[in-house]
Picture 1 (spheres, rainbow, N blue to C red):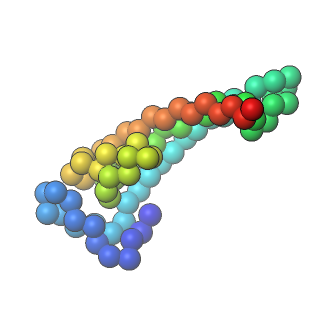
Picture 2: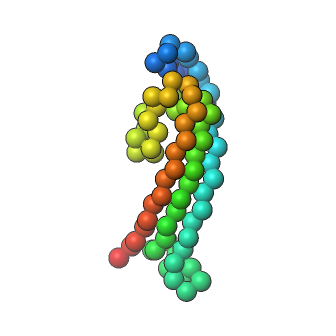
Length: 81
């Protein structure tokens, strides 16, 4: 991700480029996944080698790593009635 302007960390360092590596899996339930998006569970693992540029708590990023590595593991269960 490349921002138009630099982001300032609590340490005073500035940066405009942030890297995120992600891997994830999804499991669809039902007979051979027949439930599709109506019933599924997803898990992803995210690695930010320079930390998050800010606090994005909805994504699980705290943004207080001061440029250090940040790892986030998320799991979501979806059920459509």
